[in-house]
Image 1 (cartoon, helix red, strand yellow):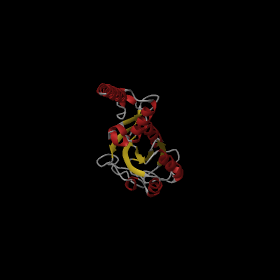
Image 2 (cartoon, rainbow, N blue to C red):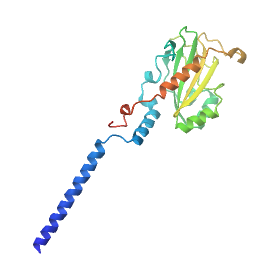
Image 3 (cartoon, helix red, strand yellow):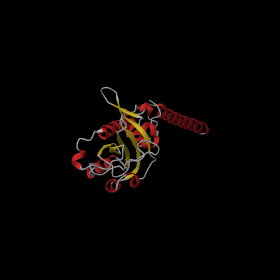
Image 4 (tube, rainbow, N blue to C red):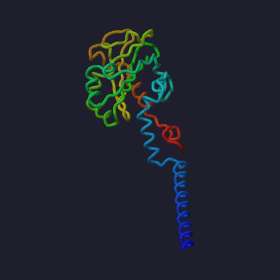
Length: 229
């Protein structure tokens, strides 16, 4: 009887060790395997949604924008404004639309053309998610409302302020609205609508370029949520 008990005990011990070994192997495999395609996709989406927090201001707003064909600079950064609430950075109409769809924060920078004649304030409006950004873009009249000009003290844009907007534009990328407001560096007030037709277009080009920079693909191995590649 004692011999039988001893055999049973040894068998149970062996089964336990086998289970522990299998569990350890499974854990080691889980910790050392590469990410699945779904994990990589999800990590990339999370990284994109949080770029406004994780990227430096200088990375979000490059010091200059260049054309795709000649690579010539068409705008250079004058300065970066402090992070703002939606109410502080957007005019009343834009605030109403963005806030209704989940506006979280606004980041702004002001650019000038190579001659220093035209200014553009660009804004990254952080929305709660991609659906909210798309809905806000569709709901707003972004040709008549948008980001407030951000004059940077001590620069040629220091007097750039509300009432001087000659051009506005907007696009959405992921959970962001990218807005732009353009005007003259000499402080002249907003011109009649007919006189604003054909305004240089610096703002439209800059907004499109900023949206491309903001949403550019980052390889999975550079996404911090992906542990191994």
